Amino acid sequence: MSKIRRIRMFPALMLIFLCIVGLGSTQSGSTQNRFDPPCTSLHLLCPSHLVSGSDPITLRGDVLGAKDILGIEGARRVSYAWQVSGAKIIGGQGTSEIVIKPTRDKQDEESCIKVTLQVKGVPPTCESVKSCTLRVNYKCAPPLRFDDEYQVASLQAEQVHLDKIAHSLNERGSDSILYLVAYAGRSACISESQWRVARAKKYLIEEKRIHEDRIVAVDGGFRESFAIELFVLPENGCGPLPTPTVRAADVTITGLCARKYN
Image: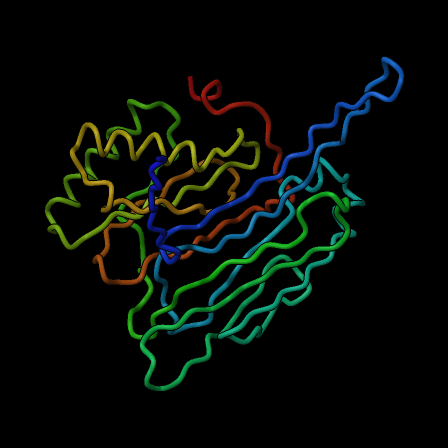
């Protein structure tokens, strides 16, 4: 008799992303192969941590690498349509950047905002719709500034900053957490911000004995050059919102990060 294992799922804590990648290599009675062109994807900046709803919020979404893949004219023809529930769009509709004002009942301290971005002008087989849920708190204030920032490439130089922030985190007690907001550069390697954050987290966990639950990784988008901002904040407070300076459509992404930072 086979054993049936029951797996408990926690939908509030788990997101499942299904990535469908078309690999074009078909034959039709000849030796000639057909290769699908590279596909665009949507880059939607939507933090999973709690953010302040006391002021209007800027959200950004774009077609990643649009100028490289679609060409300059093709990138210009891309159109953007946003939909939100739980908030009102007060600026930017029809562009890659909107400003929203959360709507709330007076008795609510927290609420969720559903955000959907749909683009037109990309190949029909490519990603054209992306959604996320933003959690906001109306009583906490956004952080005013980061505790540290670095743009260094070498692991040794990075560790100097991580040693300092680990000391600060321990000094502020177990109810504080660390936000690592990573920005990839205009010329970036594949998944650069995620790769650099993973390297920093590995060092903090393995070498500085910081518990993984006290480290929050945030995709900040893109700036002219790579950067990481570090915030030490109360566990129950509101975290930072990304502040990119370069559109995802304008970046060039090539190569593996392991080679770039070797």
